[in-house]
Image 1: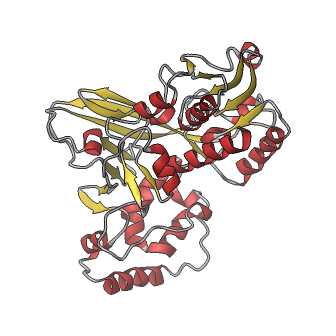
Image 2: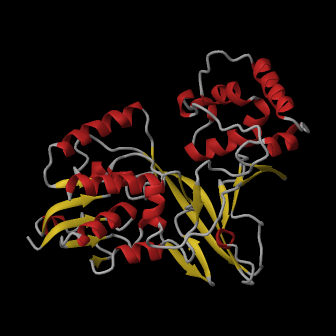
Length: 366
């Protein structure tokens, strides 16, 4: 065997494992089917602006071990995620807080806001929600649901809210304070200079092959390493033996604009169904750029997933979870491969959770 580990995918999970294995004297080869490293956290410098090519990535965690670990590879700014929701020509703060409620109803105290929400919930009279729409109204009332939840959710899932099961929305974040900070985590920020540099530093001194699809060269690649760390889709690795797991995909439309400031915020969500994209990201605001005379924006469109399209979000309903368990059982008895990351573990992870999973994998296998 030429290598100790073949790492398939140069995103956060694979790169952390490669970095830690390399430190312990293991010989690693990292491959990626894309033309660049860093997976979905890849940032590309366009017009002097670090562009998040695969959607907004805002690092946040309350785990000091994770925060200290990622700070070895980059210095983070103090960016706080405070998205704005746009419904028609009305703008609202997210998550739902006192600023939102004041704009909706003119209320100024938490007591007034609570009373208004309770009044709407009582009017709806829903005791046993039969679908997502009824579930959401039973949680926050009709006004918040219709303006800030309905259209956005229908676009995300590609189905009407009345056709979606109620369990998708178990809770909706409602805060009776004047605070626009989306996350409650202690540590939050964006790496100064973008995310790609983090992966570059992790992979220093490690052999990397780009534009290399594991499945196109499978026979050769499986025989060059003792073990495989696989961060692609687990069902594809096993040739869809039990059937395909389902995902939602995304499409991105990026434009360079000859203006200094397009929307005044890094993230603006579009919550009405008639607007086909769910949000517009203006990348310069992640790093407080006030000097460049141009700006770069990305419109994000939810997309139906089919084989061949990029899988972004696992659809963790009963059918898919049951199917994944079958693949996980195969993996448990497979001494050649270790699965990690969103696709390998068929689960949505924030970046800090990916780091935790990768470090756990390192501890168990190195």
